[in-house]
Image 1 (cartoon, rainbow, N blue to C red):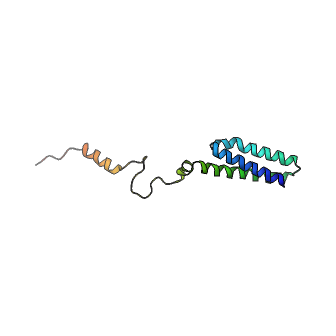
Image 2: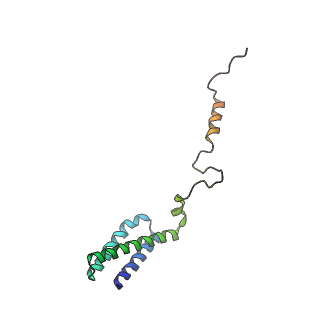
Image 3: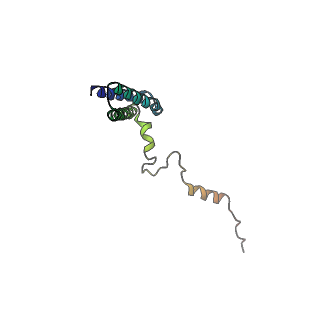
Length: 121
């Protein structure tokens, strides 16, 4: 049982360190290392297949949760900003939106009339 706690703590610390230093792509390397390392240590200690699989999944979960915590602690802005709305009820368009399409179309119509005026009688 002590080995499971050590594996969980090691996985969480590794996930937290990854979240502080690296981007999300580093989990492609860290997650298999956590899974392989914890499975090997648990198998060598005499854990069975089912117990070892549950403990390995718990280690992976602890690593991923600690990674997210570390990523949010380092810089909460870029990790959260894509999920926020761009325009916050201020009636002002965002930086990437057109300001007023109908006004632009009316200006073009006045600048370039599509037909000539009717003759005066």
